[in-house]
Length: 255
Image (cartoon, rainbow, N blue to C red; front, side, top):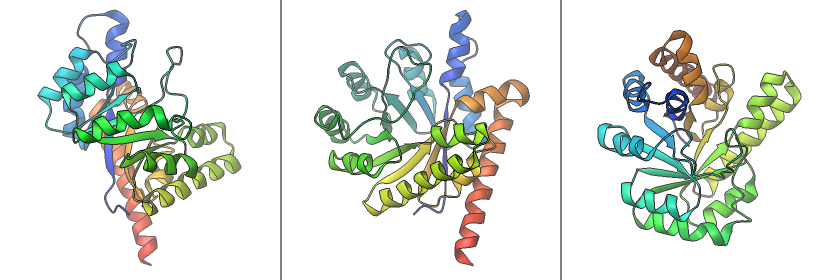
């Protein structure tokens, strides 16, 4: 169980805006520096096959210019494995990836891809890179992640967030319960549990209150909020909401 909750800030969509016009502005590395100043514990970047946002050059600069740890999100392909082994980020989160999707649409099916994924995990762990599997909050996927040697998982929170947005209280409670149960089970079987996808100011609190979760990774919402009030302000507010929810949960447990 984690008493402190880390925040990873994903800077992909700073690069998305840059790439819409070309050139070098806005710069995701500058955004990463601002995130560090605002209280982020790590930076997250997804190097996609089609390079739709983060580029290879961005990755080099993020690795070279920042003091914060970098989590590289990547698909389980030989090209991405070679890239990870060359640059050696602190953490690699293996995610499903489809060229036609706008964003990651769900968790990786580790149980079905066990044989394919094992060699990627072995190679990364052998290079002392922490490996996280991006999965649905499903005990079967947690068991499979542990069985292939991944020390961490990131639980997909998208279904919960979508239910909150839709105003479906019963569904959002059910999905939040799935996340909480998966986090508890993950810790029980020896995994470090992270969570992310779709989290906003309105949805982060109940997830942050789950004490078994050690880290939240948030990107698109923070970059969108930066348009209206600045990136550092958005991160400071998110950090505050996370810390308040975790403190309230700890206080309730202590009582």
